[in-house]
Structure formats: structure tokens, C-alpha cells
Length: 508
Image 1 (tube, one colour):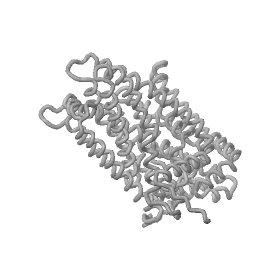
Image 2 (cartoon, one colour):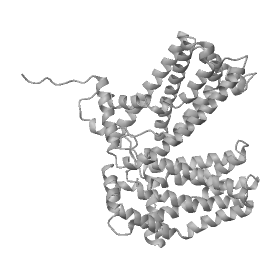
Image 3 (cartoon, rainbow, N blue to C red):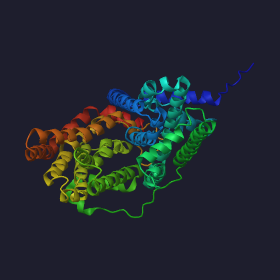
Image 4 (cartoon, rainbow, N blue to C red):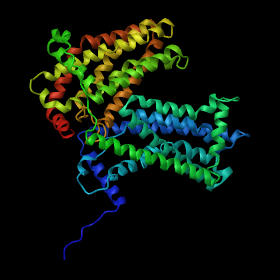
């Protein structure tokens, strides 16, 4: 008798696809180096858990001593702030990964099967449990003994469902922003409505905001059917919207329905005098102008620099140490968002770059020149900060030179380790996502934090003026010796040439 063909249920297909995705991640060219960097990421997550435990204790002490508000009401009252923090932490640490769709297009699978697997992975992600480090200790210290075990369980389940809903909301926004940066207006409008009790009405203020959400959220632990139906309906709605959006985005890229129109191609003849380095500077500029993913990264960096410059120039939100942090952040943004991906975009045409012996070293010099010149943009935008006396001219020059020197040097060294290609235009259907490269994430955090510590401690240990002069000298030393350390990067790349080329080719 002929063998009957085995049919998978939808749940079995999702589990099988999830297994394939895990195997694909292990076979990725960046898997071995990501293992080391992930350990550092786990350490950082551990530190965050420690801070959440600390805040849980503080909130529990407040709840236990309060007479006009219950513990559940206190947590639900500050929940909007927690959701906003969660949303923006995801933007820094979690990016929408490429979806493994291409290998399954011709198979007899349901059209939403791969998308369902992606959403299932997102909903069951361990990152959604991180906030339990705040909620569970708080519940043990303040809820369980006063309200009982069932109210406590309902309280924790409701909070977890809200965090999952927020994770789906994040993926929706992230996907839309990948299409156009104008979609930033959507979360801005939603959060303006969410926080409207703070600034709308006769008794507007933070107390009114907390009271509004405390009363609303307090219905969940005590078993209000309407409240639970509303929460589950909201979760189902965002999952449905996310499912539809991911399907349309993925298959639009797969069918190549979006095209890039080139209206005019400038020759940039002024760069001809700089020889091969000038030619590669032209290539960098044209890549930013013509390729969707590079252009979006450039626009994102430019927009963030503009926003942060306006905030620290014309508001009092950031003062003291936070001003130093944002100034450092402003200068490092272009490199953090673009230069850390050195050779990832070039992986699309790596074979052409290997035709001549020293093409790569000219490319690295061109990138260094371009991203050093881009530092003039944040410097000009932050002139009002110097005029207003929020920071000195010497400090601003020191930050710019430090970024142009050691910070950009560290970013360029990623060329030695990057071996996973990022598509120039497609965003959702790549084989793997170099945007989830944990080494890049760690390098970005280091580039923001280490210079800030240098600017905080060195001027305090020494005279402020002397501290900034020393930082300027450090930056100048790296700038003047850039030929030597770029040569070292090139030599290290050539030692790993075949390993990196294999990874870049296999991840196209």
C-alpha cells in the first residue's frame, strides 16, 4: 500500500519553522562571535534586573506606608511610564529581525504560516519577562499578604499581558518606521493621548494621571469581566494588525513592488583630486542617496542629532551630567548607527572590492574621512549650547576630537569582525540580520558610555581646563595616526579574509 502523506497542523508547522529558525541562527556566520557578545548582553540584562529589584523594594515601601492608595493602584498608576520606558528600551536593544520566508515560498504552506511563527516568537520572547523582576517582588512584598493569592495572580497575569501587548505595539511601530520615518508621528500621537490626563483638564497633573490609570487598572485584579475582555480584545487587535502588517511588508519586498527611482546622479567631480580615496567617498555618498537601508540609517541619525540638539539647547530637561551624555551621544550617533556596520553593506559586492590589493584600505580611509567631516553637523547645531553657557567651547571641541579619534577608531575596527551582509534595500526577508549582531550592540554602548565617564572623571580629578586639553590631545593623537591604525585594521582583515568573505557571501 502507498504511504499516506503526513499533514502538519498549523501548530506543528509553527513549531517546525521555529526549529528551522534556531538552526539558521546557529549556522549564521556571526553565531560564534555573537556568543561572546551575548554574554556581555546578559550581564547588562542582569544589571537591569538588579535595578528593577531595587525599584520594586522602593515601590513596595511606598505602597505599604500609603493609606490612600492600594498596592495594585500604585503599580497601575505608574504603568504608562513603565510602558513608555519599555517601548524605548526595545528601540535600543531589540530590532525587528529579518523573517525567514524565501525558502518556504514555493512550499504548500498557508500564506500566514511564516508570519505566525515570527509573531509567536515575539510573544513568547524571554525579553517580555524582564519586567517580572519588578512586578513579582513588588507583589510578594505588597499585594499577596493584603489581597490574597488569587488577586496577586490576576495582578501579575494582567501586567504580563499588558507588556506583551506593548511588545506587539513596538513591532508595529518599528516596522512602519522602517518604511518611513514620518511614522514617528504615530507613537507621538498615541503617547500624547495616553498622557493627556497629565496636561488636559481643570485638575491636570501627575496625580490625575496616576489616579486615572489606577482606577482603570484596578478593575483587572478584582476580576472585572469587562476589563479583562477589553485587555484581551486589545491584545488580539494588535496581534491581528501586526500579522497583517508583517505579511504585507514581507511579501511587498519579496515581489519587489517597491522601486527606487534615480532622478539625477551627481558626478562629485570635486573629489577627483583625492584619487582612489575620493572615488570611495563618492561611493559612500551615492550609497546614502540611492540605497534605501543606508539612506534611512543616515536620515535617522540626522533626525536624532537635530532633536537632541534642540532639546539640550532650548529646554531645561537635560542639565549637568545628562548634558555631557547627550553631547557625547550627539557626536557618536552617525558612527554608532552607520560606521559600526562597516563591510556589512559592502558584503553585497565584496568580490569587486577584492579585485585590487589595497581597495579595502582606501575604502576604510574614505569612510573615516566622511564620518569625521559629518561631525561638523552636530557641532554647528550645538553652537547655541555654547552661547548659552551650558557647556564650554573647549569641552565641545574635546568631544568632537575624541569622537573623530578613538571612538571612530573603535567603530572602524568592526570591519575585522563584521561578516554578515546587510541588504541594501530589502528589510524584512534577508537570510539573517546583522542588525542583531550583539558585538555591534556592545560596541555602541561602549562608545556612548566610556567617553562620558572620561568627561565626568578626568576634569574632576584634574583641573577642568587641563582635563579637556588632555582629552583633545588624545583625540588628536588618534586623528594624526589614523594611517597606522587603519593599516592595522586592514592587516587584521586580510588575516581573516577567507572567513569573512565566506560569511559575507553566505548571508547575502
